[in-house]
Image (cartoon, rainbow over all chains, first blue to last red; front, side, top):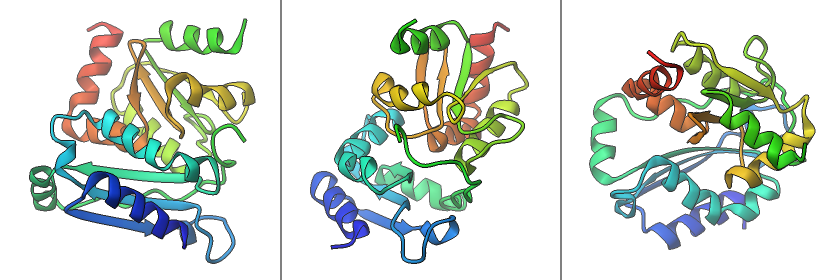
Length: 109
Length: 105
């Protein structure tokens, strides 16, 4: 299974998203071709109702702890409830993630 | 000073602080770059720690905050979030309010 598939499965199982998009953005960074190091994840789930952004991100960071301490170096997270998703699309959708500037890897390495 | 005390000291004694890769003048990561730009737009002083130059903080901050990635922003001693959250707060105008309040208006 690819890392993208693992991320997708873990989030799908835990959060029952109404919309889920896992985008491998590694090609925009200074890593070998076909790497799985940089991801953008868009999750729309009503399990986020009443949850602060920090707590939403924490719950996904926990789900993906193994990946984040392994090969995944960057994870851009966009977490919304169904209502927020509708609103966001009216305002032009999800912004692009930034390009790398060459900084070294993940936390603690 | 023990590393966790050093982090606590930095977080609690600066109204606004970002732990980032590189410096505000020369960010070494796209996420750090965008986040520090959002802070600059608030037009208030803020502190920063370049974690590339401080491996001990780099290694231990994720354990301190229970947050695995960088950058990390703290306002009034409280963890605010990483890049995506800081940018959302900036877009909604909330970040400016938080920074103003922390730095005294």
